[in-house]
Amino acid sequence: MASSRRPDSNLLAMEHDPMSWQCPKCNSARLSVTVQVEAKLTQSEDNFETDADGDHAWDDDSPMTCSDCNFTDKSLAFATD
Image 1 (cartoon, rainbow, N blue to C red):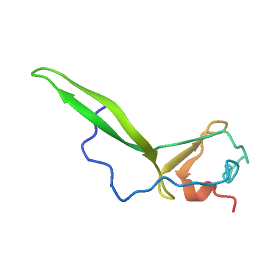
Image 2 (cartoon, rainbow, N blue to C red):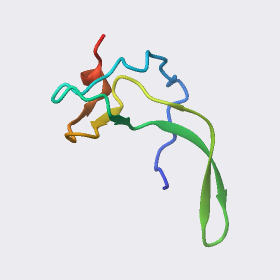
Image 3 (cartoon, rainbow, N blue to C red):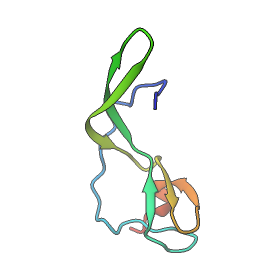
């Protein structure tokens, strides 16, 4: 998947207790979060490829979705602490 903007190099991966988030609607802990990752871009005349290169990063504003009820909001809305 191609992206039109480069991830913010100042965005740091957050380290939290694995159970620090749950869905505010249904209380499920089965969640997904949208992350940013740096990727190597290889281009040819008629194609391009990306290869993830490094750690992933996300923050309080990253979209999070509940796998059980499909509620979506910023990850901060799912924080339990």
